[in-house]
Length: 225
Image 1 (tube, one colour):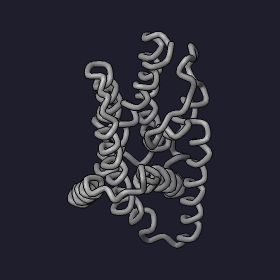
Image 2 (cartoon, rainbow, N blue to C red; image 1 turned 90 degrees about the vertical axis):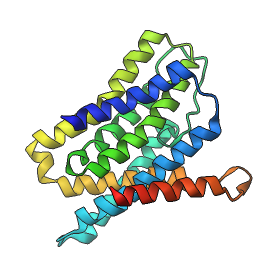
Image 3 (spheres, rainbow, N blue to C red; image 1 turned 180 degrees about the vertical axis):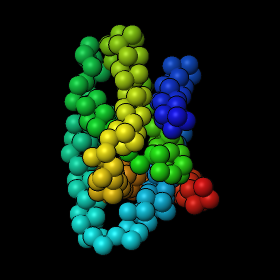
Image 4 (tube, rainbow, N blue to C red; image 1 turned 30 degrees about the vertical axis):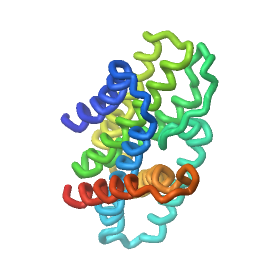
């Protein structure tokens, strides 16, 4: 049960930070994103990859599913405008909820919920990833002309997408039968999102010592979990 509560709480924490404090320091948000990206990447490498390849007689097919996940996330980003890794480029004068954005984020969120109950490390990685994403999403919505009750409803629906994925993976036999394939798909999604956060060009292509230290801290934390 705590898997569901914590993944929902991550969205509420991120949204409440924006609603209450209205943070404007983009540098701190980028560092938080860097930490979440590094942590998610490290957890994927330390936990999920060994899990799907352990005693696996179909390793090459598993690799294909990972590549499909990478490509799927690339397609989803076309509709989400990069919200998963810190960028939303949409019309701020809109009165309507951007349906394609939330459809894409919803698919991403449901899929990332599938492997949560298998390891606490993945749960921690998704929580740390969802907080800055929720902050970015909430900030964008508050800067549009969409009414606050609708914004709250949208964020509430978004908060329950990852628990929905966890519920499906725990209670649907067909999904359990193809757990390794689905997890490999999720690995591809995580690899794409985390590496995009970490390795997209810095402003001016300058070496950022602070960002490097944040990445090292996140990696060490993921290793110790």
